[in-house]
Structures are given as C-alpha cells and as structure tokens.
Length: 207
Image (tube, rainbow, N blue to C red):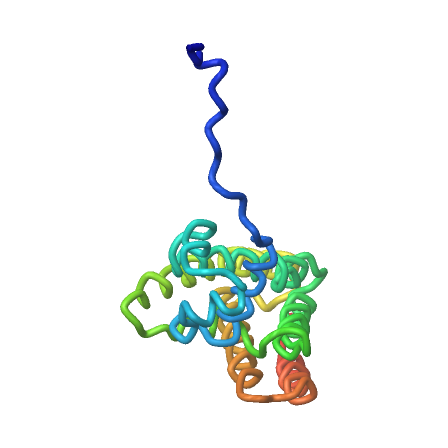
C-alpha cells in the first residue's frame, strides 16, 4: 500500500469565493442608509437591497455598524467631493456658494435619495445611537477645522471683515446646509433650495 506524503496530499481548500460584487453590495447598502438613516435601515432592508444573506453580509462587511461606517466612507468620497473642491475657491463667498450649490445638487439628485445621509443618520435614537452620532460628529469636526482655517485665511487676505468670527461663520454655513438637507428630505425642489442659496449669498458678509 502506497503511503501519501505531505507533498502528495491535496492542497487545503479555501472558503467558497463570494458570489456577489462587494462594491455593488456596498453601493446598495449606502442607498438604504441614505434613504432610511441608521436606525430605520433594518438588516432585512439591507440584505434585500444588497442581494445577499445575513451570513454573507457579516463575512464581507462585519456587523451593521461596521457596514454603516464603510457606506459613510463611500458617501463622503463620492457624494461629498464638492466640499473638498469648495475649499479651493478664490474667495470666502465663492467657498460658501460652492458648498451650497454642491449640496443642493446632491440633495435633490433624481438618482439618489433626498437629503443628507449624515443629517438623517445623526438623528439615530436606538441602542447604538451614541456610537453613530459620535462617529458622525468626529467626521464633521475634521471638516469644520478645514473650513474655519479657510475663513481665517480669507480674513488675512482682507476678503472677510476682521471682526467676524470664522467659527461662527462656519457654523452658520453648516446650519444652512443641514437645514436644506432637511427641506430636501421633506420634498423641497431644487428651485426651492436655489432660492435659499441666493438669499443666503445676498447677505454674505464682505470686507
């Protein structure tokens, strides 16, 4: 009887390859979280949209919270690119306009859910709410630092009044953006939100 050496033994089989596209599945999860918020998105909603089973979701993305973080990464990379471009604009007013016009376009797109994913999910109130809110606020804090720095530079350039509080101006802009996101989620049209932008720009402080 022939003996079987280790070299002759068949190679160990790996786990079955995933039978779905993780990129497409993540995009589908993003749509669910964006439309329903973190709390409103059930595991049944997610798996149905992603076209996978719960075990497959856990294996590929971790738990619901981890999936949300990955979806938020993608949302910021793809849907909020205008915020990074806004900071490159030549004046503080142009920065604000680019932020608001970009937000209106994103929030009223016919291809995506209405409103802002971050604003919708920041209202989470379930058992994991504190963790989700803290994560969203941490991301916002980083964006806030960059925006305040841009407004401070505008002051040094003589583009904004010296007495103006850059942080207060940043909060003012964020309040406008979040207010428009809520209006969009409630059915406001692009024309409605363009009106908000135009009114806001007419009151923008100048040096």
